Length: 147
Image 1 (cartoon, rainbow, N blue to C red):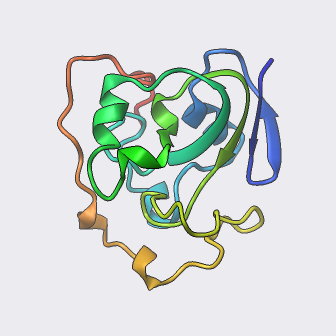
Image 2 (image 1 turned 90 degrees about the vertical axis):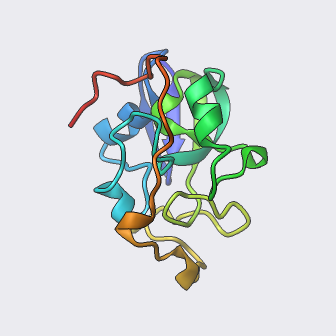
């Protein structure tokens, strides 16, 4: 069984499980701040579950690649959407500051309290600032994950 390490904790899951689902089932959130409550619930449209992942995971889907090209993300920063990423082996996950976790040049979000470490006021984003990306007919990794 693959092991997912995130914010100082390790959890096991089945091969092929969606990373977002694994984290949430373990009581760990791939979101920062208000994005915990204001997100697309795994549809791959909001981008708030963007994380850095090392290890064996699925290739990015078309939906994921499209979303990560839309600001505030940058397709070149290597982030993945936890809701679109399937765990294929042991992985380490890192969450960066910012509503969308987009500040990859800042210190990662801390393990203890889930708050960003060494961030500034630029991480404060209003609820209405998130812009979903238009969907396609492709099935997402977690279509049955509607809350």
